[in-house]
Length: 319
Ligand code: CO
Image 1 (tube, protein in one colour):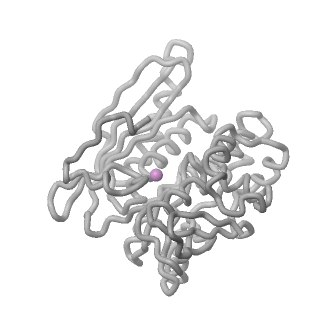
Image 2: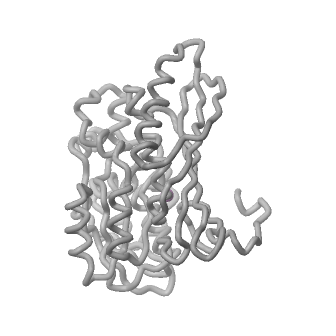
């Protein structure tokens, strides 16, 4: 669809040259660029405050994936205030404000429309040093792939909607979704990585494939190394697969090598659309264990899930 829209040729729009960039990047001067992104969605948990926290952590994530620092945020709200009253909305906005404050950013305004189904998210603006910016481009053969959060939030929130699990049963995932990628991003900048993206709606499969294509390498992912939140595999085995997972399969699986041999548990994790997922980093082999050590010390996950191989064009291999 986007191909049918006019493309900007402003040389300061640095993100135009980055395939599958996580955020829009606009250069202000040699040392500074604006980095901008937005996201909003319907509630994924019942508690309005935690939904607000999750939506904000998710919206801020693209800024962190690029090694940027969030500065300001705008609330985007759709809400049925006549049927639900304003109280839940206040709690949603308080949750969002809580995470934006934790990020060291400021909410500068927002906009609300009447909507039958509640929706919340934010438009976020940050700063990044274009010389230190981390993008989807740059994976090198031999690099190790590190993921900073477990997978399965799509499966668990589907189970929550279906009332097979209550919110207490998916506490680990809710807590994971409310966790900012801020600490992981800071460690990434400190150690220095080859490339990074955050794992969101396209699942690990889609985002890994995008990074492979942007870097013109093959990403090799080890099926048995994929981390999952508690109860995810159990719920997946019961068939609680979100619709987005099937869309990801249709779109990305034909582009995966040896896709026929992927074990079903791994396939469910690979294609599960993530809300406020972790960062996927490619790091030089000799720095991988230091990166893992520092991530763990900062309270982040640090799962080694694969490596990078050379390829003529972007490829994804599952083994
Ligand atoms: Co992203």
